[in-house]
Length: 326
Image (cartoon, rainbow, N blue to C red; front, top):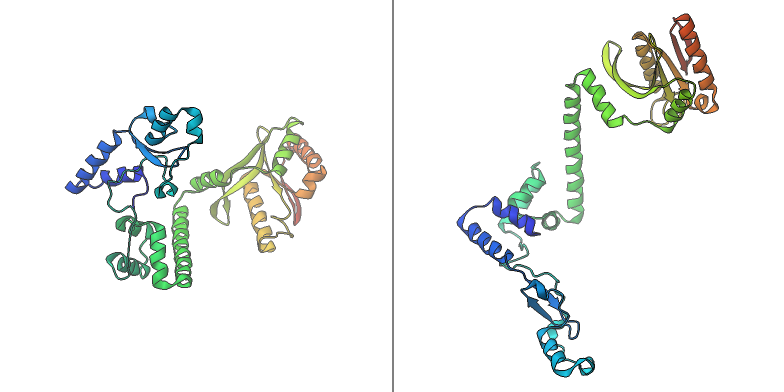
């Protein structure tokens, strides 16, 4: 089925046999001429015009001649006879009728019907078959529901979606596994590199005290012998030393983790902090409560002073509570 003129142009571009070339010539000749179908404001009848000068005409030729004959007042009182076809709804744009049949038709047992039946028993992508057969999805679905029943088609569709999803997920995991650690970090930054209000507010508060942290820095860090991409919510550069600050919403970190195994989440957060610490950073995790109360700001300003004065590094976790200087 060809839905619009753009679709027809694409179809003719990819089919160059003699019948399609004749069809194309006919269509191009039609396009060079202006045509529109108008409806009369007086009698409701329709007529065709072939000049743009007539595109805003309000009266059909019959009513126009009566208007010139009767004059304005008598014309307004005149009641024209309305033909049966007046009630037919006609588009304001003329349609090309170069195609013999504007709608696709199918019947049980024909070639299209059997092709759809065969597709339902394979894993062939539906889009390719629709393109090859020249079908729309609505026609495909109508035929499939006739073959399987409405409930059967719904079950087939759900199973197909699940199967495709599993395949796509497997491919995505394989593609991700082939990336270098730095490329994984860059990809995660592109996908999840935004900041949240908790981090942005803390960064703004630090800026007022002369510290200007960089937000949401992704990099590969060593965790259990493997380079793994991790995000530093804030990084503060003190010249010869840097501090990584991790801002933990309590629904996403710590003992009240709401989206899975809390113990596993705490272990992962601890390993991440240890990995940054092993690279030479001071690492500080603050809870949402500590950040919102203002305690985290006072504590961090004190840590910055100690780091600058004593040239030491700190590993600090809010859960399990840890504070280790080196």
